[in-house]
Length: 176
Image (cartoon, rainbow, N blue to C red):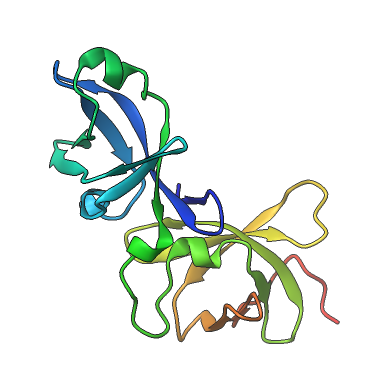
């Protein structure tokens, strides 16, 4: 799951183990596709910045080499640490395309101007992405799933207003 570490850092993976005897690291990538993490040349591991990262896909994981990490023992110290990148390293997207981390936390409002809740997370289904929306005023943490289909269920995303306008009927909400 991609997470905002600060206003400028985005978590893109986690170090899960060491690889070999020369300081290689196994990294679980949160990016989609998973090897997108190899594009970033500067990683924050924990709170330390590493520049000149060498990373490659290896089966179902990523193998990375970080400067100044030259032994299995040095690599082992980093196991469990998160990998973050500065948002300036992200590629620019076309209009009406968004990174998931930009959508998390936005208020979801239906076609009748009713607030449905806030985007808690997103996930892929193969056919389309789906927003997990935490219902407004839900003391029990109830959520609803809304397909992320721009121009169909998603009418408009307004990052400045922190909202997503949807064409969606909440069957659990009474009619006004």
